[in-house]
Amino acid sequence: MDINIAFGADASQSATTLRRWLMADPELRGHATVTVRPRQSLEGQMGQGLEVINVVLANSIALGALITAIATWRSSRPRPPKLTLERDGVAICVYDSSPETIERITRAWSRGSEPAPSRTDGGSE
Image 1 (tube, rainbow, N blue to C red):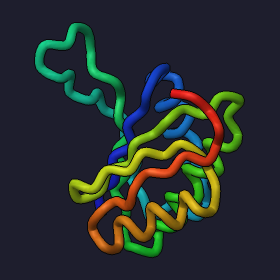
Image 2: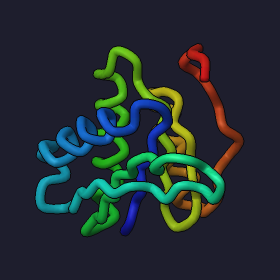
Image 3: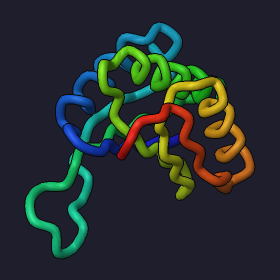
């Protein structure tokens, strides 16, 4: 199972810290391969593309651990970045770390389509 995690602003530092966080997570150890790669710039954009973390999971049980680890990492940040998680062409924007967001991701990926995005953190982007 292949998951891509893309970042908004300040991608380099966020990608580095999340990658370390995921690699240290005991629930993912041995069940996930975590790499960082540059995201392709859109045609006509100047500069390099933002970084993307690619996570390859050994089994579907590790998916819940990955989503929980990402939510926990976001809640540990003073200014949590907006993330976009993508699996099998289904992309989900993550604005908060609530249990409802974790459930929304799980539901969307299990049925293959994303529900209407919700924003519950009160932040601005």
